[in-house]
Amino acid sequence: MGNSIAGGESVTEPKGMTQALIAREFFGVQLHYADVLSAKAEMPLVDAITSHTNFHRLFAYGNLSKQSADPDFLALASRVADIRNADERLDTLIHAYADRPPDPWPSDRFAFGNHFACEAPNAADVVRIHFRNRFNDDAYGPLHASNFNQRRVDLTEMFSFVADRWPNAKVVVGQSWLYNTEAYCRLFPPAYAASRAPLSGPRPIHGLSTWGQFLDFRGHAKPAVVERFKASLHALDVAQPWLSFPYQVLTTSAPMQAFRDEYGV
Image (tube, rainbow, N blue to C red; front, side):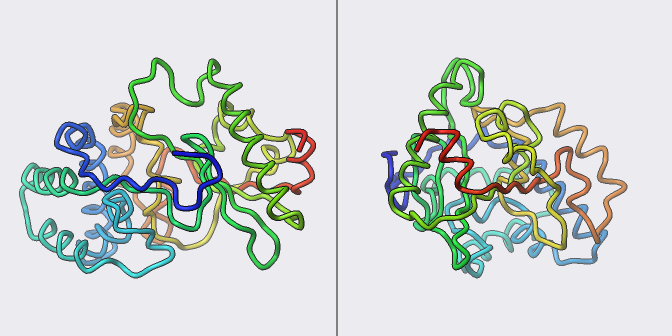
C-alpha cells in the first residue's frame, strides 16, 4: 500500500482458505455475541449478525456507518442465521470469507505505510485518523517498541500530507480501543493521548475499533480475551452492550498545531 493514496488497497484476489481458517475463533466469538444479543434484546439474529459484528466490513461489503447493508451480505447472514449448529455456522462463514477479496481501506481515506490513514477534513475542519493491522508474519507487531521509529515516520508523513493539502485543518480526532494502550498512545502528542474519554451513546458494534481488541498482530484471536468476554455475556445489558467488551472505545482530540509541533511539520 503506497503513501498518500486515496482508496488504499486495490487487491481483488480472494484470500483463500488458509487465511480464512485463521479467523475461525474470531468469527466464533462474534457469532456467540450475536446469539446472546439476539436472545436478550429479542432482535432477529440476522440483524445482530449484520449490524453488531464486523463481518459486513471484514468480508469487504463496506462500512455500515456510511451505507446500507449489501444484499449479498444479507443473503449470507440469513443463511447463517438459519443454521442451528454452531460448527456448521462457522464452516459456512469460513467458506464464504475464503472467496471474498481482502477488505481495503475505504475510498475516502488516504493511506500511509501499512497501518495509518486519514480522512479529509469535515465541514468543521476536523481530520479523523485511523489505524489497522493486516495479517503478517513479522517477528513483532506494528506497535512493538522495535517498530516505534517506523510508526513515527508513518505519522510524520501523514501529518505532513495533512498540513500541505489542508492547511486550514484545525483538529485531529480518533476513536479506537487502542487508545487504552500505552504502545499506541506514545506515538502521538501528549495532549492527544491525555484527551482520552469513553465513547458514549447508543451505537451498533461493527467496526474493528471495537472488535480489533480480540486479535493479535498476526490475525489470530486472543484466547484469554475471547474467553473472558464470553464469560461476561451472561450479564449483557442490551441498552449498553458495548460495556461488556474488555476494552472500551475511547475518543481522542487535539489541535492540529499539536501534531505540527510533535512531528515537525
